[in-house]
Image (tube, rainbow, N blue to C red; front, side, top):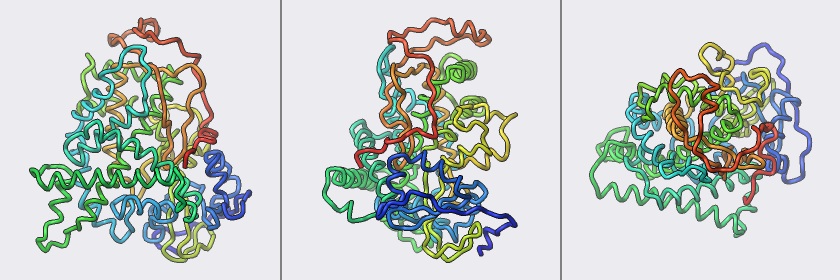
Length: 496
C-alpha cells in the first residue's frame, strides 16, 4: 500500500465495463461515442476495469480517488498508452518525463511561468488577441477555431522565442496539430502498433505532421544560436546547456523536447477552450450580456487589459473556469503503476494502465448539480465551494500539475475580454458544432458570424443594452440552442 496515498476506511465500488470486443476491447465505444461511454462508467463502480485494445486498464471514476492517484506520483507515474505515444512525439520534456526527472526539469522552467512573469506578458497577450480580430468585418463569417489557434500559437511562441511566429509557420503548426490530435487519440484507445505501421493516408499525414513540428523547433534553435541571446524560455534552456560542469546542465535533446512539448500543449489546449467559450457564450445570451457589461466597465473605451485589470474581470474569469469545467480540452489521461499496489480495494499489478477523465469529474452531479448546464455563476466568489474546486482538474493536480496553468488562465481571460470588447460572435443558422474528442476536446472547425459591438455607457440598464443597435449585416440566427454535453462529440473523431 502506498504511504503517499493511504487507504481510508471506505467501501469503494469496483467493477468491469460491459461491451468488450475481441482485440479492440472498448476502443470502438471510446472512439465512436467517447463522452457517453465515460459517463456510463460510474454506474459500474468507483474504479472500473476496461480494455484498451487487448490490454486491461482501470478508469478512476471518483474525485477522491483521482486526487489520491495524482498526488502519489511515485506509484502512479506518467505512462500508459497515451504517454507512450506522446513520448514518440515530444520526447522526454517536462510534460512527458518520468517522475525521477520531473523535479529537475520543472525547477529549470518554473521561473518563466511564475505569476510575476506572466503579469509582464499581459500587454502583448492583448496585442496578440487584437491581431486575430483586427481585420474582421461586420457580418463576416469567421473561422473561430483558426483564430483562437493563431492567438495561442502567437502567445506561446513569444514565451518560448520572444517573437510571434510568422503567418506561414503559424499555419503550418495549426495544420500539423490538427493531424496530430486526431492520430494520437486513436493510438491511445486502440494501442495496436501494427495498425499504425501500415502506410495509409492518415498514418502518412500523422508522420508528416510530427516531422513538421520537429523541423520548426530545430530551425528556431539553429537561428537563435546564430543570433543574440534573449530573455525567453529558449534563452533559459540554451544557457542551461553550457558545459560549465554544473549539475543542472541539460542536453541539446532536452532543449528540443521541452520546446516541442510546450509549443504543442501551449497552443492546442487553450485554443480549444477559447473556441468552446465563444460557442457557449453565443448559446447563452444572458451570460454573454453580463460579460460584455463587465468588459465595458473595466476596460472603458475598448483599451487592452493590463495585469491590474485581471482581478477585476471576475465574470470573465468565471466564464473561463466554467468553460474548462463544461468542456475541458484535456479530457482523458493515463498513468501507469510503478509497482504492485492496492488502490480502492483492488490489487493493481506493476505496469497497470490507470485512466482518469477531467470531463467525467467535471460532470459529476454530486459535485456540480445540473452538470450539463453552462453556468459561470458557479465560480463567483460568493458561490464557489471547496468541493467544486477539488473536483475541477483542468490542469491536473499535485506535483505534476500543468506548469503553464497561470499563463493559460491569464491568456484566456485576456483574449476573451479583448475580443468581447469589440465583437459579438453568433452561430450560423443550423446545428451547433459539437465538441469533438480527439487528443483534446473542443470545436475544431467552428465558424461564426461577427457583429461589431457598440460600447454601452456604464450604468445602462440591461433592457437598454439589449435594444442598442448593432452593425451586423449577417442573417439572424435561430433562438439560443443548447446541447447535452454528455452526448457531445459522438462520432466526432474522424480521419484517424
